Length: 401
Image (tube, rainbow, N blue to C red):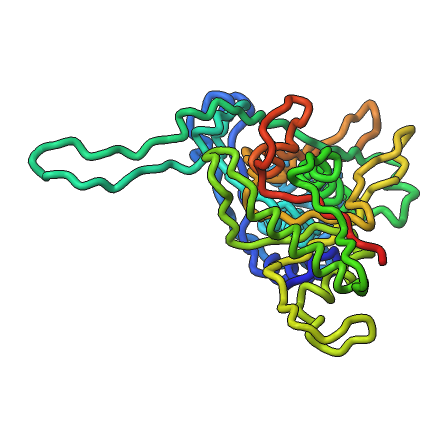
């Protein structure tokens, strides 16, 4: 069993990020992108090298004098120790890689909860029958020119998934260049990645913690008499797992498949959860009596107390990315929720405005949509009065005594 929190997830993803040596880039202008029928024709991967210590210095030498690497080479050709084209080209590669690596290292929990489908040519509105599993049946045939049974899509599913663009931008200023000795592009990139991570986690976890769960997907704390807190906790999870395994699939109406189970919780409750699900009640602990209570089939415990920017004041707005409430947790089947990606975190860059004395402008955006009906089931829209007992998640109230 693994415990996922900001520290462990970042450490694990740093190892993945170290192996990244190429970045997806899009060629052409807006017109070319708009009329292209297959965006894979416009996308290519280019190799980049490791980041270097002079990256920030090179950025100022390049970005503040030119609109493109070609123009920069022409403008600064006669300057002392000017960067050559290869050096400038390497800078752009390093910078794009830096954004990619930071995104990979960030505590984005999406992949631990949902499955992701990426297609550069997704429409703004997707029919779920096109991305859900296809199904077929092997039947006996004579082999004498009779038709074979065909694989079919989810033809009866009429649900749709809408994709949305989320973006954040940055405009550098002359004042920053003149007076802010602590200004680095590193801070800007980190702020963009943090904003992206918050939006990604909020799309899934934010919807879970905001949902009103119906009775068929709620597990109360165990209240068996003459039990310790650990035993109450253990019994609560046993009951919750039974409840989860009894839920039905939204698409098929049959009992859900449960290849693995994860827990989403507040970090304050990890100790209480971890101790009992590992099967440690078989030992002679100070608060638990030795008994035959084997470990529970939980693959991961995921901590989420709130977003990186939760509670931060931005202008006149206080940002809100609430996490799991202490004393409550959710057990669920990972990979049931769906995230459709048309664009990963993408950066647009350009020169600033002369009249505003803006030296550089950047924007980061992502295009994605989420489909949580299969995960939340009967609790997806309880006001609609649908049938109970559907979904792949259960809200659990933890015992306190």
